[in-house]
Image 1 (tube, rainbow, N blue to C red):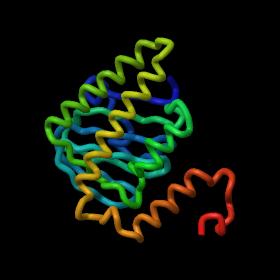
Image 2: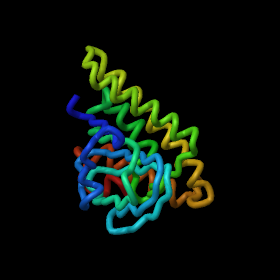
Image 3: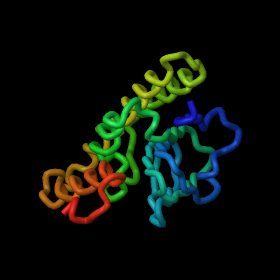
Length: 194
């Protein structure tokens, strides 16, 4: 499958470029580091972390990870075409705002039990991608949905108190952002979104 890539930082001998220099991706990226500490530079902002942590990045964001020592964990990068249809993409990515850079938690702490669950999901993703069965795309999409739902659950819990999710100004902003993402290909006038 060309629309998704899963890398293990345990088995890969060469670290991805994001650990050496700033990178801009044209895909969604989820990075899960199981231990250690460092600084994740995202769009010119420095975010210090102590593992286990996860990071979610949207296409176009610039980032670099300065990790102390050899990192352990996984990286999954995927395009929106990994989802079976556009509605699934809208439900998983747009409606949850999980990759929303304006409201995203730059560092998502993982509790040990959640880090263990992530390890299982990443292992299942890697295994399924190697199988290349007729239904591999469906299974991979399902595992990715589970991973995104877990991350969204953690983010919601973390954001309580940081951002009032029922604040009318936030809800208006979110509706605007989702409308633009859903309709930008067909509707270009500002009046459409006003």
